[in-house]
Length: 121
Image (cartoon, rainbow, N blue to C red; front, side):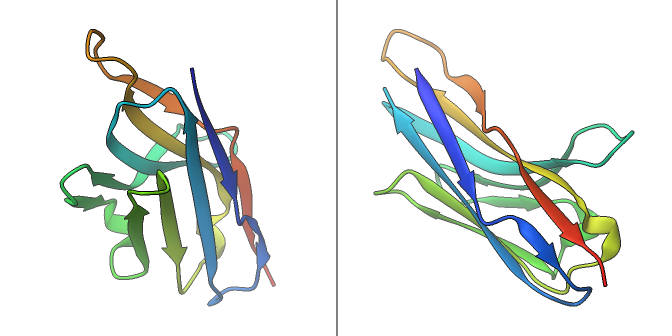
């Protein structure tokens, strides 16, 4: 099994910054991609940013030029640096990882428990 543990959420004023971290542990052969999703009340979960095994990055349009994603391959950890935060960024942020646990199994999606980000004055 694979566990994803997130940290770094909290409350910040508009225009402020937060850095989220997510560490993967357990039986890991390869991590094909790691990323962040978010879900605000009464909204569907949506992609925020994703980084693949080869370092390719994808961002949702609403966070481009404000958020960056990076990965520490040795620590199986992904980071989301969030700058210029807006009230509409308020949501629960979930870490996601596409993990292959065995050479005989396909990669599987795993989710963290979520961390609350609140942007408010």
